[in-house]
Length: 192
Image 1 (cartoon, rainbow, N blue to C red):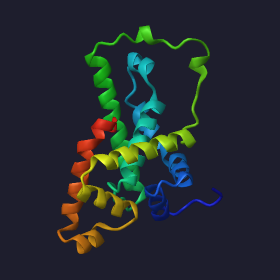
Image 2: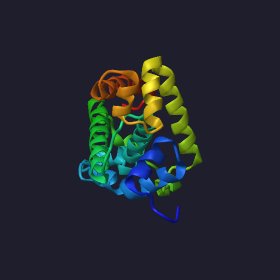
Image 3: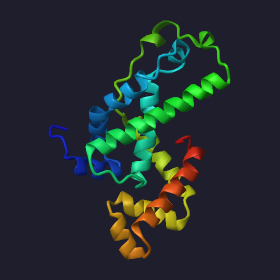
Image 4: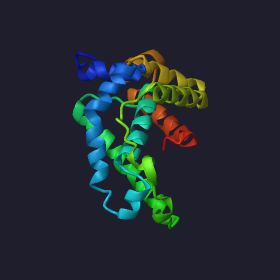
């Protein structure tokens, strides 16, 4: 992508599942996610279990699916960074609690040989985009008809105000309905 998209265009295209927009978003915001994890990843045992890229990929997978479902209404790059950093902090905390709670011995999981040299560039490839699309489809299947309609309207770029005008009710009420629905079904798909 020769020209960078404006923030509004970027978010609109991410909501539609545009691969180039996803790549631009990863290029621009991956570093902030990884830094948010690295500053917390001080325990050597945890570093042997996962790294900042693992958490980053989990954050981006959740973000892209939820963005395509219309959950986020972001108006600025600063809001996006804040959201991604908060998601990274939450996912790091969940992983750390999981590993500590089960008293995992990280020494048993040491990587040997060439596997230690594998480094991902972080840009979502065709396989990652297909997985995200499949997750979105599964997420939409788990929503009831009203919730699915809200998600589809948001994915098409309709504002909460326009949705409220079309369907009645309040913009905040519809936003909360979709948010609760996504929070309900996301754990079933591993998108906590």
